[in-house]
Length: 576
Image (tube, rainbow, N blue to C red; front, side):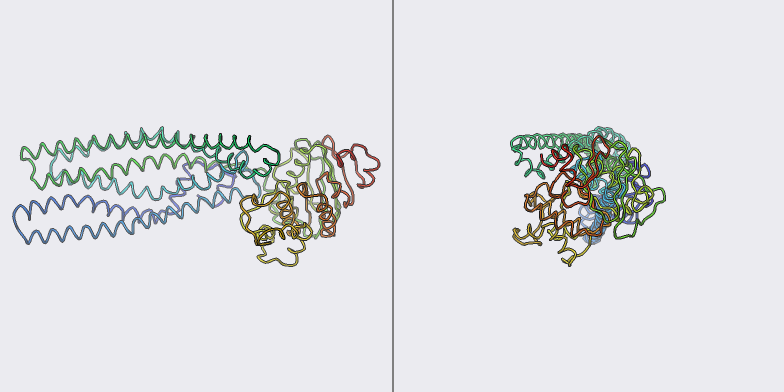
């Protein structure tokens, strides 16, 4: 598979995911196949050699022959041991590296600046695809050599039995294909059920994870008991889905084992009858019984491999959906990979239509601090998503320094215009790691210290046990709402983009802290273009001007003081 595929530009199928996973490590898979085939052939020869020892040495009392054939048997054990050791190593390396490669491909698609791969999927579901499904596909690199080795063992066993007795050999040769066909038929329902149950389990796990991450908010709303019940219901759904998938696999493997047992019983019966009428020797009988017992392993391996292949195809389909997800926004007409280079760039919106926005026109001169008040929260959210290029507007344009963002690659837009969403998440690491995430600085330089002071994150970390080095759990759940907001705001300020859009950055902090943040924010962003999507009077009081959105358009444009004096509706929104 070529490098550009799997970015939403082309349709990726489940078959292509499987093929590319195997093709990328075909050298290791081929080496593992040869070595594991050597191991299984050596295993198949053990009962044959034991039978030879009995007939040519034990039965005749020939000590010399006994020593020679025991040495041959020892050499066979040395060969099969070496082959398994290094064959399994090659197969496991191919498996583990393919797993890492698939997870990297999924992560690259999810992190693509054009977005779209996460649409309609819960975080838990995405995690399941990136981890569990990737593993199920990658393990094909282990099971292909293993299954090939099992097939080689069947061939060697069949040839050995043909030499011992034509009826026994034919029984293997003629009986194995129908048995494999039965395994394939039984495995098809497992493939269909496996994909459906994996999807249900992932969705339920995702819902449960989201509830856990928001437990502080739910407790604050007094919704703890309801959330606990919803979590329990999601957990029961996940458990039920997993149990159904497990029952399907258990039924499949049980059926395969029953078929194998019946098949081997027939082989043992025929061999015993041939020994009774003198058609085969005692050594031949020992070899035949030993081969019949040995065949349990390869046949079970083929059955398990069938189950793994069925699961891998189902998982590959889910990975293909992620890789083929259409981008939320286009790559840019000109594909420019650099935006305006000015320290402060002008921002303009013309005729923007998306959701509640109905032909919005807005101009923000370079270096201005603008407040945007939207009584309808969905209008502010829609504007933030359009500016962040999380979605493509239905119509209209967004201009950065006079250049349309639709002429720029999404990465170029985000290097100039940063939108800090209201629900910005923190990542696993330390508080300092989160603040410096956009700058790449490992140590708190002067810019980082200034950003933390402006956001009053310095005050927040004073209450933490290890200060800025305090570990942060996933999505910042170990911090309070106010601490999370201040750290997220410090992260946005530390990035120091030419244009910064902040959506309700202080809703979880107290009034005194909010006033301090407002004053420091204005000072920190001097000379940079900043847009505040908020109804906070403290933040609006430090802006250069404020625009009010209603019915998707600008209905008022003045200073905060003028609007508070002359506009009753505005006053009610920001003080109510």
